[in-house]
Image (cartoon, rainbow, N blue to C red):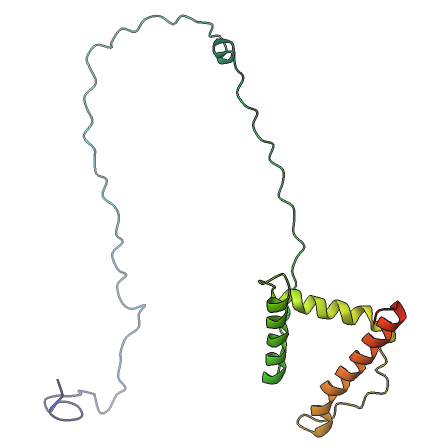
Length: 181
């Protein structure tokens, strides 16, 4: 429901003293709130019998083991081994351009489609790529790569491509050394 007019109502009054400052008080000036406590509800208890009931005197009895009665032994309990500790996983964040993200997703989808492992994880594909490159590190010559340059410059945009070509040369040279064609 809409208000008929904007602003404060016509009958609103703000009574402030003209000569002295306003005293609004302090929370410490107020009385503390009452402390609420639980009332103890007394439960009705049943009255005790006037005379205690007579109990027979204690007689020790020897009880045979259950195995002797049944004739079979209970199956042994399984030995609980402590759970094997999995290696700690270190998480990294990769900042990819939309094009490189699409390229990586295409590689992952290719692996899932044409390998026997249809549910290959992205981390497994990335580990495979990193292992390949790590094995070719002895052949990797990156000393002649052009410097990246300032952000947004042509050399900054070309740096990933130059790295890719250096990686490719190293992988091919490492494969040739091992005799893989």
